[in-house]
Length: 217
Image (tube, rainbow, N blue to C red):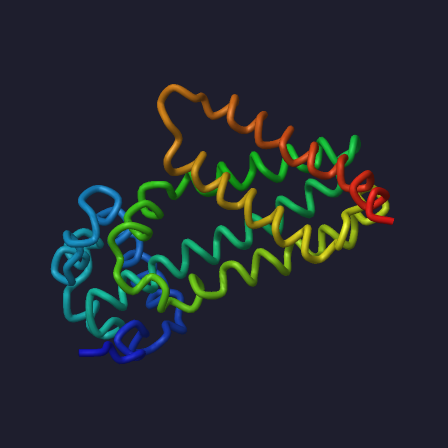
């Protein structure tokens, strides 16, 4: 049976500080359960117990376990997008562009992903409706908008052949690489080694771009 869209939505949104604190506590409890035991371990009773909230209070806001998980993941994804945006602003303000900016941006994003690594691993591998969460569906678009701003501001320093297409491809590849470093890094490769290699790979692509454009003329 197809799931109703409302199954993933809150019954009502908290407006007062006390109700917001209750919803936050429930989402935090759900996140801890997912990180520690996986998606299957999340039940309304266990989430309420872990949050120190009566199950009746839980059902005041959430119709089921799926809606709690959706709200928990949505909040985490919003935080990641916000950190990506802030890190790009910080990166663009650094001297020694583009090296220093790219290095800062990549390191900050990987740190943001690592801080939520347990939750993200479960989300990607176990949550069957991840793609139905609006924040998950819109993640790529949000990242693309942030990168577009950075591309426009750094146009004087970095020149790409077919700027829009090149920026999209490079961003997609780097985003995938950062996820792998943060969530699935092999034991024999250190984080620092992989980050340095990724930064150098990006710089090589940027520095080679003008030459490729000239060859095409």
